[in-house]
Amino acid sequence: MEGKNTMIKPVTSILFATDLTANCQRAFDFTIDIATRLDATIYMLYVIEKLSEHVDVRVKNIVGVHQWEEMLDSHKLTAHKSLLGKTPTNSVVRKAIHDFCKQEDMQKGSADFTSREIIISHGDIVAEILSHSQKNECGLIVLGGHKNMFSKTAVGSTAKRILKKSTIPVTMVPPESS
Image (cartoon, rainbow, N blue to C red; front, top):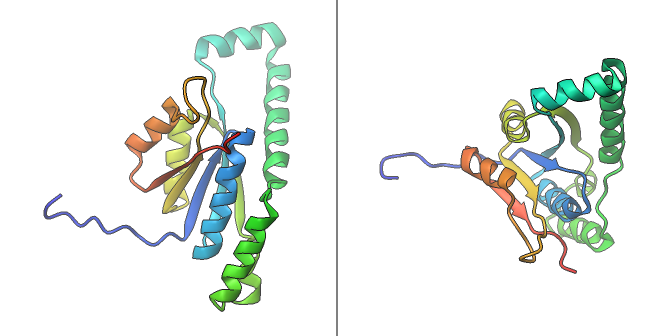
């Protein structure tokens, strides 16, 4: 990379992309910790994956266009409620954040993380994550890892595509070990 300026910009906003599974809780806790330390805004993104045109048409024919749209709206509402209620599961994490803020002489209000935006999108997961990270000028993307039957953790094809195409740092947080 000779001759290129590879300076990474300061992180003032973080995109936390979730599939709303339990595997993402640890990634969310990590995101809150980083956002608190950096006084960054979190954009919480859930993408409803777009079906192929063929499948979409068949589903609409089976259940009806109106019913299908109602089902999508219901799914979006459920996802929104889930993201609204997301909190760090570990009280030790919350205490550690508070102690860190106290140790660093941060103002009292900055020890409690409150700055977050919820985005529910519909389309190609990778394209939506990358698009929203650019649109919101995020300096970091955080993803949760998954377990698979062959190893304790796995990087799925979606995460690999994001890692390959992203122009900003991407952090993969492994799921809780059992």
